[in-house]
Length: 469
Picture 1: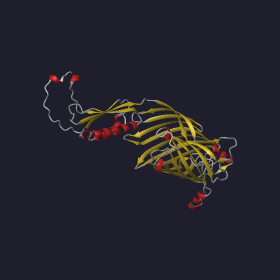
Picture 2: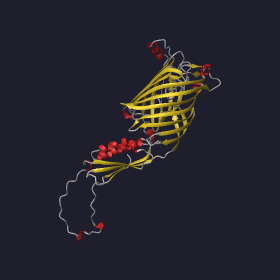
Picture 3: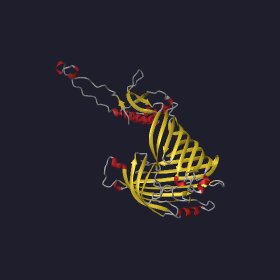
Picture 4: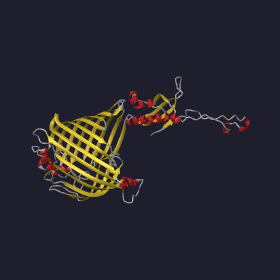
């Protein structure tokens, strides 16, 4: 909780031989009954002043919202609790390296007998910081270099430049983040970016150059995000043997879209949760604000987790999505859904199921995928209480389907097509949690329901990522 210093309200008496006074030199005073000592925690107090020491470029009006709750404290325990809450809010702003709290009695002519002064001693971050780290994506890794300018304008703004070089993607971009004073969850983000990705399962290379703006805000128990994105896309063939269907998609296009995301997340961990649930809904509408692409895209994710006996956990997940073209123009290979691989339907190669042409996978306009897992501790619990707790064994059952739909047919025909030719797999493996950032899986998979054209990974399969079915 950080350092909290509270000085005594009553000075301690000083007496005894260590202060140069011997017991024989003084007369024994009459023993008077000691007054009943008041419990300090229950004493009514008044917070008269709150000081913030150490400010440089930070504007004081920003911090007024974060520390206002301290003035409402009624006793010393309440003062310490609300001071700790205020400290957490100050640290959440991302502009201080250290925040300490000092609680002392009020001084001065207007000091009340039960008055307190609370002082926050802060140390601001430097104007520019650098970072170097590695990141794990969905079965890919990357090296990331970044420059950050925290508290750029004095009100918790943050400007970031980031360069990433990965196994399948290289990108660089500039972003500007601005929170609302007094409500950090409400914020605006502006992004400029250039991303080049390679997709070997489709023999495709995609370069996106774009700009986006996001507005994030909470409503009840949900986190909402509204986003506009304008993008110049360039698609090209990754190999000379790319199919005609991929070559036909190559070229330049403009995409302008509006999207909305809603998230309810009650899990205790996003990587290996033991309890709680997740609901994520995302909608994207392209074409009404310009550009060549015109479509409506809907997808969702549901996850439920529950702890069982012997420290085991059962987890169930369901994904689904639908891509509806608007007008006569077909959807782009860059906007469709892909399925398969160690992070979704295990036992199949990465994104290597569904519609394909000459070995190149083209994605689908509708999909669903479900997973059931049972996580248990390692047998005999080696390394319990330490490194061994990062590992879990798991048994899984995955199923799903990916296809294109004829939108001239009704919903009943669509559901029938999604229920045909279901791919599924089962197996067991070991999971390693990398902090609360990513996880690694080493599984033995048995794919079932394999269809013509699907690529499978029968046996041992390795996976790394942040989002797993």
